[in-house]
Length: 114
Length: 113
Image (tube, rainbow over all chains, first blue to last red; front, side, top):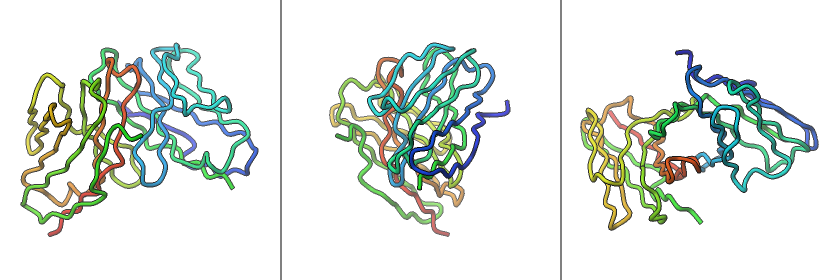
């Protein structure tokens, strides 16, 4: 069990640029989640995959955000035309099917938009 | 509108004493509640959970109590140890987690020697 892996760990970009984050979940987990956390707040749900199907999307996920999980394994989260308000920690989590509530989180990817 | 509220941003407790962290929720559709612990530069880690059909769940030094009528849950840590110093997040879910977890803002627990 190697845990949930996210990269890059930190990304600094200029406003208007596109960024992409990758998440590799625990191998036997078929559920994958993306969350966003800003300073002083708890993680906020963005989207959820069951295998390769994106089943839920938060209204926080504007049309500049897109997430994929093409083969039901790793996932990518792309942010187009970044804005300063996108600066946050982006957390990925995975879990087994049959929800028990226990999500295994990665260490996160911190985005700084200048 | 915050559906899960942790009204104490921080809590300081002496080592060996009991730590009590509180959480309130507003959405009566929540049916599963969890506590996560987070150290700096790490992702949150699952600590303990409780289903809405129960009022108590215990795991070692950690006990979670649920009061559905008051829409309140609490996490008790006895005895508190220095390694318990971390940010604790209360979280809730509904519909088997299909909407993900809704987290509170967290409480920073500081265990003093």
